[in-house]
Image (cartoon, rainbow, N blue to C red; front, top):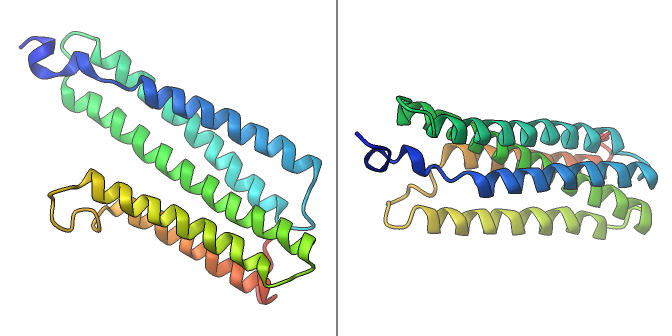
Length: 182
């Protein structure tokens, strides 16, 4: 079976490698900037999530590069290549989720400081996460067009939404001083 018949030689991961590299730069830039003008609290939690995202984006680059390399080798199964692509997809998605969580917490903490605990501080993480969820839902509908209820059953995306929803609950607890985000 030739490369064209098996589809092995046609693994296109360059865009994902580029996007992951850009996200690495963004995460490192954000980390450097937030430590220059720290909110009164939340900096440790946000830094933790951004550092986890950094590691996962680096893994996404590595896994996609490995998939590209493997796809161009003779006698490598398509299944092996797809494993690396799938691993990269999961780590990229989880990293992006951590960035969204970090931004929700960071924007909330900065607004708490600037508004003296005004209720408006809760609106930014709510609107931010709702916008992310709506975009994710539209993406799922487009991605799974014609596949009944498949867009709702995307396990990985549902886990990511649950993680973001848990963050929103923690933000509500923090606002009511029931649990403080360090």
